Length: 380
Image (cartoon, rainbow, N blue to C red; front, side, top):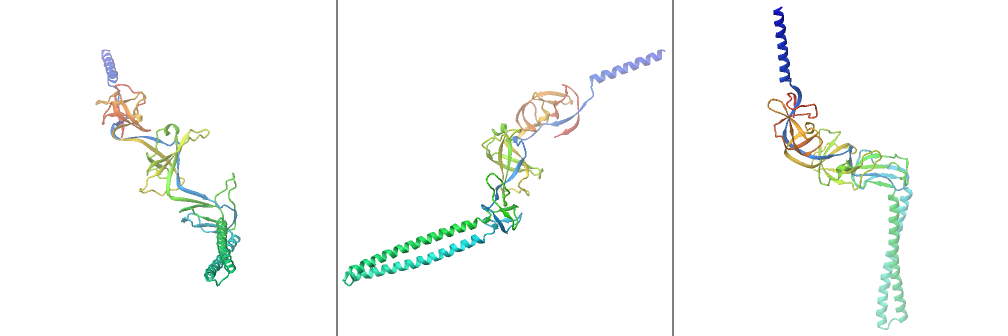
């Protein structure tokens, strides 16, 4: 009986010692731990919706008149040069009008030559009559007749010159009408789309009724990104700020750019946040991937950047602006910090901790002062 009692007492003491040890030395809680490090940090503004890559020059070309397509000189994807003929309507009647105007101008020039040469002849005759009249070898009546004839012929020469001007203007007019049947490239670029085939009748867009352009021409030598920025962030922007461009097509290849334009008004779309459109020019002199007009792109405008600063993730900061720091015994200490620059992921620490301090990676939790922590993984 005594032996059994002593065994029970021993078990009770062991159990009490176990509970006392658990209370005095609680088990460590697993948690992700990071180390405060120095790095660069930037205050940034990002777009609210995906932006779009656009060409600096893009024209949806159309003819000013309707007609039947007689010649189609390019295909989609072709590279064209300025003033290159792309498409031509049936225009034999207008070509005949141009030819007629050319012949009219040619005839007017002949008439001018004849009239002006005759005027020179009349002037020489007048000069001879005047010389004879001075020696009383020609009558006054002959002198007057020669003078009138010379004057009239000079006026006919001037009238013939005016007729040449009229004929030239008529030729310019007919050529302008003829050129309305031809579609030429206003700049060097790539033919993106053609709406029309040989023999089809195409018409220009009537007012208020948009129709597809005959040729969509894109200048791919100059590209930029346009993106919407929340109206709250727009006040801190100005042209010239550096920008980082991220493309969905090339997520691992961010591109540098420069903020080149800020829209002078706010877009107010129904059921959408009010935004301000901005344009970002791709920096020259860099190796670009094969970019297509219409690619989606995100822009990050860098408002301010600082180098060699103490930086920690936002997730490691509590709502009251403090962090959980681990001491040498891996126990938690709540430390108030002062922050500087912030962005969507990190914050600059001005005071409270130093480089190399170990912090909880995720501060928002049921943590307690002095709690023992076991690092489950260490994130940079």
